[in-house]
Amino acid sequence: MQFRTTVDIGKPSFLIEPLEPLLFVGSCFAESIGRRFAHAHFPAVVNPHGVMYNPASVLHSVERFLDRQCPRIVFLTLGTNHVYRLRETWEIVDNCGKRPQTLFVEEELSAEQCAHCLCRAVHALRCKRGDVQVVVTVSPIRYAKYGFHGSQLSKATLLLATDMLVRQCDNVTYFPAYEIVTDELRDYRFYQPDMTHPSEQAVDYIWERLADTFFSPRTMQFIDEWRPICQALGHRPLNPDSKEYLAFLAVTLKKERDLLERYGRGFSPNGKVQAGGR
Image (cartoon, rainbow, N blue to C red; front, side, top):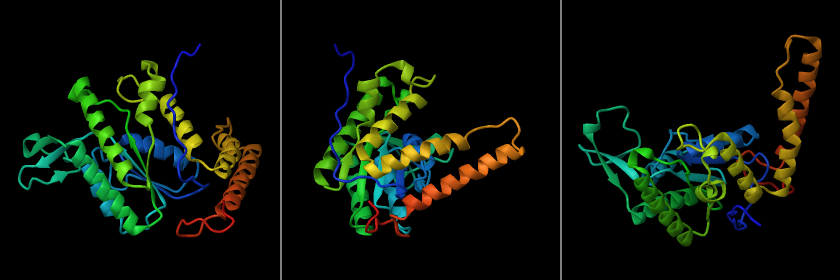
């Protein structure tokens, strides 16, 4: 007898290699996942222009990033379809900057408008780098300020938009982070005390599902070798100045350097996979 449902995730058309550069743009959920990549030694750039919650702001952040070397893999994480327009210019702002609410008008983008912003972002990324792969997700964080019905409507709009995007762009993959929390975990014990943000345990589980989906066998091997080194580096000794601990630390740091050197040989300085790097 089965007591829970498991979200089925299809096999992607690409895999993430060890130490591969990545870009994360979007909500604070993007930061939670991006930190785990950075902790695993991936050169991850996370929200270089701040947290972006809606598709229009995600587009703005991507456009501002294009003057830099764009990585092969980009994660776009959407939180809401609500935007704020500055009354004076009617432009969508990415951050109200703690200015008076009276200066702004709140608006809800339609699924078509969201999809249009995302298509522009993907097109801009592809113009910068032809082999770019974009992973789009909908954040499982609930927005209580809209009311829970309003929050669900917002998520539904984003889900419709991401479905349109995937149908239009062959280099875009949808990862069901939202469905994993709402359908697989489906319990308040997987939320933080505010009952709106997923707990660390929930984010860890999403990270595991993501790794199972996108990591190449070589990346999984790297993670297995990195895990005990990471645990050793996280050890907090009673006497950090003792000769024994300093010797232990020196050995552990050498293991880390050797590991990074072995797996880092597969990438050229611009982040592209070299021959023999897989």
